[in-house]
Image (cartoon, rainbow, N blue to C red; front, side, top):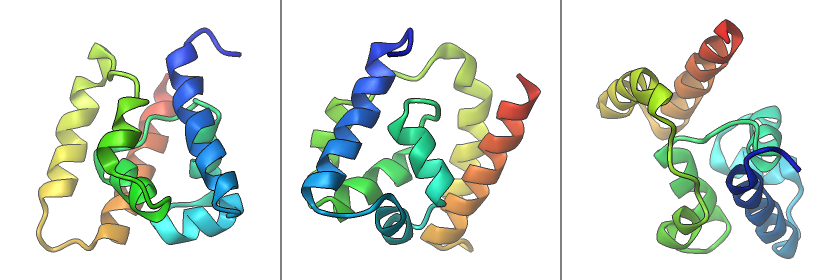
Length: 115
C-alpha cells in the first residue's frame, strides 16, 4: 500500500472493474486511447488521470463516469498549474479525444520528471 490509500483505492477499483470485464490492461488502454504504461500507473495509484481519461475509462468499463469519479481522490493544490495546461488542451476544438489524451499524457510525463 502507498501512503495515499485514496489513490490506490481508485486504481484498484479500475483494475477490479477491468478484470471483471475480462479485459487485459493493453485492451482497456487501447479502448481508452492511452498507453499501456499510463494505465498501469493509474491502476497502481502513481498517476492521476484527467477528467476525459476518467470518462473514457468509465465508458469502456460500461459504468457511469459519476460512479467512477466517486472513487477518484481530490486533486492536490499543487496540481493547479497542471490543471490550466490540461484545461487548455481539453478546450482546443482542433484536437480529437485521442490527441488530447496523448498530449495530456506527454505533458504529465514532463511535469513528473521535474519532481
